Image: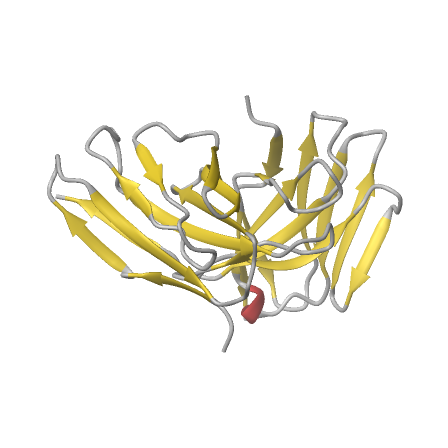
Amino acid sequence: DGGITQSPKYLFRKEGQNVTLSCEQNLNHDAMYWYRQDPGQGLRLIYYSQIVNDFQKGDIAEGYSVSREKKESFPLTVTSAQKNPTAFYLCASRGLGSDQPQHFGDGTRLSIL
Amino acid sequence: QQQVKQSPQSLIVQKGGISIINCAYENTAFDYFPWYQQFPGKGPALLIAIRPDVSEKKEGRFTISFNKSAKQFSLHIMDSQPGDSATYFCAASIGGGSEKLVFGKGTKLTVNP
């Protein structure tokens, strides 16, 4: 089945540690996105990438980093500089063309202990 | 600055009733307005979308109404069912597609049997 896989579904880390969230897609989509979702806050864009080896900051990029070495993969690192990292993180991808919607994975819930 | 304002934050409807969720935007450059549906523990999924060249779009029990002069759009769910219970997000973008979406804060809909 084609889709977006985010792993793990739940992640726990100690304060001060960096943590990397995985996002893999087999839809052959060029564009990929990372969002953060907090209760009552909607989805806020962290980073996005429209092509391999290129990415742009979203609205809340501070404390996060990404890489796009392969078309199908777009990992997100939550660094120790992120002051409030506990949240639900969503990855999305999108094909070319104005009529192509963003498709979302099922998210990773990150909790900092 | 919140670019897309969504209301209400939560909504309770009886089975068979009409659910109405409203969104207002400020940026007149927005030209694509999708609605996403999200079930607990899952990623959002595109429900229906509209562009400003039409005032209404219907897909089954779901209808988007669009008022360009008022800069408002709304989602109507006819004959609401318990299975419609989910969180709904409106969004907007520039460029006619979902390249970079700005999301509302979401509406949690509960449909009572």
